Amino acid sequence: MSPVVDATSESTRTDAVTAAVDAARAGEVVVIPTDTVYGIGCDAFSPEAVMAVLDAKGRGREMPPPVLVPDVRTLDGLARSVPTWVRDLVAEAWPGPLTVILHAQNSLVWDLGETRGTVALRMPDDEIALAVLSEVGPMAVTSANRTGQPPARTVLDAATQLGPAVAVYVDGGPREDNQPSTIVDCTGEHPEVVRAGAFPADRVHEIYAAAQAVAGTTPSPEPEAPAQGAPEPTPSPEPTATPDES
Image (cartoon, rainbow, N blue to C red; front, side):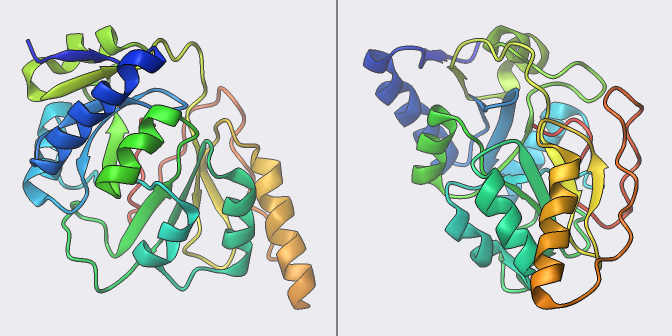
């Protein structure tokens, strides 16, 4: 059994974060809590570790993982041609449950899978996750469960499904009934909410419309957002985000 390190108290949190950071830097796979559900992840710039994450979940390169970042400033290092309305959106939503799909920087030396030149980015609102990210840097992180199974809301849920495929499990306590992040495809002329989640879809369109108004342009027609509880829409082939992402 891979070690489970306790991060539920101030006295144990530093050692737990250090264990996760050391494992990720060594090219290993870790499970960490986020503000939504538990995530399985690794250094985003380690192709072998990214493949290990996909293997642990039982999925292929056609479903690349999103990338969690420690800071809003990381946005420009990983994405290009970021529209003003996206900057306004993340300024309000990050850290928090919003994933934005953007065109990736051409200079990035990584292999997340079949991304078709895009990257899905999120800054989680979780002290433990941000502490790990601040040391490791961008991490490829997706929900800590086998594909097709419920996302893990406790470290035990994650360990039961993923077992020895993970080097270190960080226990940050239960995630309760948190909603997943809202996923917004920002690669087109207007935002497309490809999965409804904790961040209001209406607010996405309001921020987009406000930015268009300031720029003196007419907002494009808003696509209808999926209703809460409705079947998830199928993302277009280009975006990297996946339906069970954290």
